[in-house]
Amino acid sequence: METALAYRWRHEALQAIHFPQKLKLDQLLGIDRQKALLVRNTLQFVSRLPANHVLLTGSRGTGKSSLVKALLTEFADRGLRLVEVPPHDLVDLPRIVAPLRDRPERFILYVDDFSVAPNDGSLAALKTALDGDIEEAPENVLIVATSNRRHLMPEYTRENEEYRWEGEELHPGETSEEKISLSERFGLWLSFPPFTQTQYLDVVRQHLSDLGVDMLDDDGEKAALRWALMRGSRSGRVAKQFARDWAGQQGLQAR
Image (cartoon, rainbow, N blue to C red; front, top):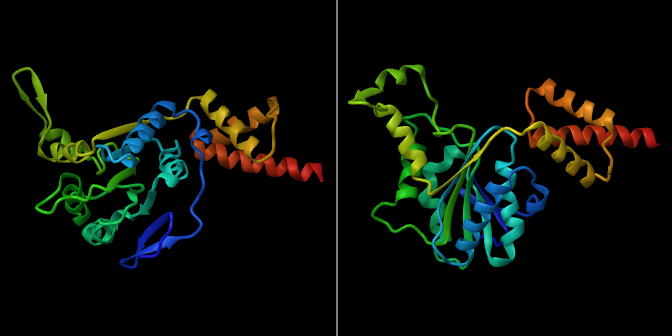
């Protein structure tokens, strides 16, 4: 296994990533509560203290994946390493973890945009990894997953028919219970709501500053809001896309 800060599981092998994306925690705005909780949990992990597997859910483009990547920048010097695992490769988890078990580093298995069908083999593999089986889970491996779905699996209208009343209490059916039980296996569950207009504009300004554009005048704010309206989303991803377009326009005008 080649030594690196980050790896990805591909073609049934761990491949070193020689140029990992470098994000800083202070670049991520509008998610202070989520950031604080995830940083604390990760600090416990790299300090060899008890820590929880993490599930980050919520609206697309609100910083879930960026926050995980920023952990590597923050804690690499304390031995943290990132291993990206595609959701469909979770069936390979025992093989992925095996070479990591006896290493001195602390590994986050990063599963981005996780969503599975009820009968997917990845579902059983993830449950086993989170709850353990007859083999003891390695203490230097933590699973952090992101998903746009609250319960990680598609939800169907017919599942409402499974709900039942017991006295005055409403109980979900077996299918819904199965989905809830999967997400509950993560000890730390962080939700990312859509950005407000103020948060969105703050993130636009941050990205423009990173690109060397210090001011966003009234025309720029109106353009940023129109950009978000056309895309049907106010998110960090949309803010970054607008900032790159606006900074490029300003650069052309300055030539």
